[in-house]
View 1 (cartoon, rainbow, N blue to C red):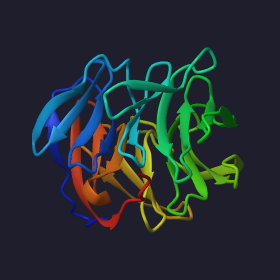
View 2: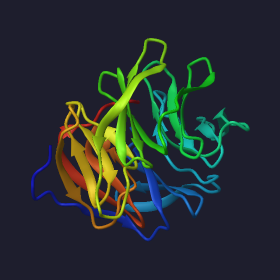
View 3: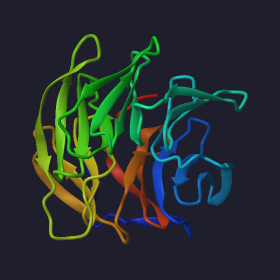
View 4: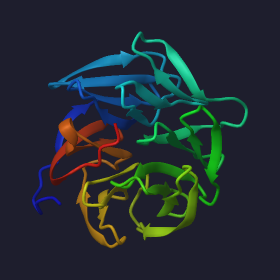
Length: 258
């Protein structure tokens, strides 16, 4: 998966709290600086502001058209090609969306941590709860074949896995892996690779589990990580960690979801 002596390289620093890394097909990285209420852009070593007044944007991803999807303070949005914002999920029932993933059928799964719910926004635009058994649902990620959804439960300090039914409903949720540690941090953002391994931002670094939930090792990071995502062409891994963004080389390719 990675070399034992893999270099964790700092590529950007000086932020309040970084989250939600996602690499565009156009060749740049976006990530949230949550307290600053900004979405930042990193391209070829240079950092700029992609969006001011981000409404507390946290988790980010793209859809198949390359439009940015964001978990904001009280809603999930899509940024259209002309820069306008479309609300995909909002209203009184949505408390504080945390992370999200785009599915091949055009739907979106997102976690609402204080509500203790994982939602699906269907292709038709219906917003419906699909899992209620997490204490603090955080990062979400689909398996390579999109037949499983992984959810980091920060409250129980584990990762749960669900079967994705034909209609998109989640079934048979169970504990996939535990991240019990005395070190600072809880399971937060997570991603999968093409071989079915699960990469989780957790205590001390990025925890890597195989498809059966066996811990393969932890990649130590200089700061406690909040999330991770694949780089250009779904190669390599970018990690948001407190005030900085890091990058490391991997031997596997990430799961393509957009």
